Amino acid sequence: DLISEDNCDKLGTGGFGVVTKLTHVPSNVVMAVKRVQIQVDIGLKRELAAMEEGRDKGSRFIVDYYGSLKHNGEVWMAMELMKMSIHEIKLKVYEEKRSSVPEGITWYVCYCICSALDFLKTELHIIHRDVKPSNMLVGANGSVKICDFGISGPLIESKAKTNDIGCRPYMAPERFDPSITHYTIQSDVWSFGISMMEVITGSFPYSKCSSYFEQWNRIATCDPPQLIEENCSQILLDFINPCLNKDSKKRPVFKDLLKYSYFDGFEYETNKVSMVEWMQSLDI
Ligand code: ADP
Ligand code: MG
Image (cartoon, rainbow, N blue to C red; front, side):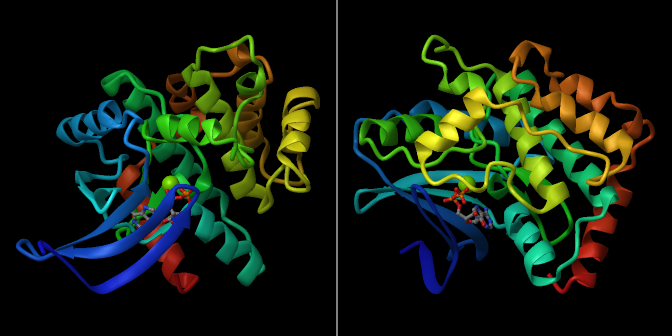
């Protein structure tokens, strides 16, 4: 009864539940609530603690986390309400508007996401494990932030146990190698590269796969996808392509990516304003 559902708007549906817009009545704060139906035994505690720690340490590149509660056998995770995901923006731009994402906007998204993932690693000592365009959210003020860090790991594992793995196409090749059990941040670098490739070209590099096994096969055995000259400028191509090295040790680390020459004198606030203006021009 602390929460009003009168204006209960669905913001999206994911593999593990729904996200809706709710109002916290005492404070009148409008927020996004992710509802996940879970078996009691999956340990989300550590991840929820990480989200709390993230909130306390604070980063402008991380979606703010308000807290969680159990309700009717579901876990409700309350977080900052954002406007839409990079995935939705991509669909809108390429499919509805038949347009493309300007490179300046792409660089800004890259800057925010690399900063976010570097923050998670350096400050919170966690890796994301589910980097993809639908976990990159844009605020009404043009901020770009990452969400769903940490929690996806246990959720994915618990789903794997139910044999309902589904397609996990942003996953790095080493994630399909049974001899590698240790997940490193370099797998997030791959997922970042695949996500940005999708933002730049408008299509997903492994899109025409009929099944999980086909996808698995292609990621594990084929040459990695690479941007080509027709897709974008050379400087952007040289930034993204090294992230898509099949050898995880040869990929750049997020700190290196942030030192890339494009980011010399990079003005975050100016870019944030451009993001708002661009969204307005698209009627988003
Ligand atoms: P997935 O990330 O796999 O799409 P989720 O359940 O995490 O699944 O989220 C479903 C959708 O809800 C996302 O794609 C996004 O569009 C939307 N969403 C998630 N969190 C928020 C938020 N804090 N503010 C606004 N929309 C959100
Ligand atoms: Mg998500």
